[in-house]
Length: 410
Image 1: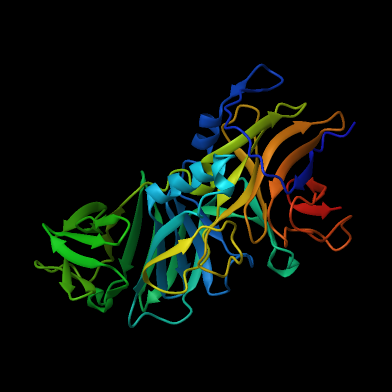
Image 2 (image 1 turned 45 degrees about the horizontal axis):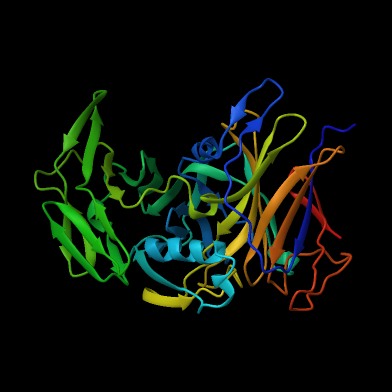
């Protein structure tokens, strides 16, 4: 018998939705893991590389509980959703009787961008401290947009973001920290951040207060320092705000012969556990004690405009290159003690897709039963049935998935 765990998924168009469950997963050594431990296994900032699952100008993304950061060559694009709307949508999808009678719920969202005038075009970037797990994206029938073995990292650095100035992004506790490192002789005055699409921006008590239509963000007063003779020397530093343009001021100057580090911290809703990992539906385990959780992944696409907007949550993510947001099926594998994620695979199409139950058979194959409303649910060319006939037509998509990446849907 092989110890390779496969994944067999059957999706059908149904009107019933499954119950929320919390299941203990048992390993060979009586180790147990709960869905809460699964969440803790994902409780770190994860900068995820782009391998074609998003538009080409996006280099990395960072998920928050109610949104996503898209990192680009010379721009940061933030997308946030109204948290109460997300909860209503989740309840709407979980209500068997009402979900097909009531008007589709609305999702209020807000996107804004931070641009960096004068920064270098195409700065080199590198990701550091990779996570051991990976993700796979099988969204829609267009296989050119599928991506496998997508890695995530704990920090990303842009070299010479400005000439002689590097930019580093990483998590700090439950917050996002970005750091500018200014080489000797270079000018921190060149650093300028322009905020586009905010409802309001103010400077209060040394902190930047950023207001959107769905949340409030604080950028703490920047901390700057230099390492001189092996000692960290604090450098007085403050934000300077001119309309929507932000720069850094150094009232007491600094030693221009030594590197200067500028270290602001953003405070908003925690990124710990993205929306993709919060809505669990089912769980099981295999003969080796690995745990599996099945849920819906809220997968927001790239916003096409800044500012506030509202969409009808008709479900699904029709196009990860589109701003509309929705749910895909998410299958995640964990180590037997539940402490480490091995992989996550996202399956879906243009409407809502969700798993409802999972079992592992005697061949160590993970079998997932679920429902889809998507006419373009991800299938391979030689699938048994590649069309969706509408109504209550059954879709049988049998996915044999090796290590969560290679996919064959029959």
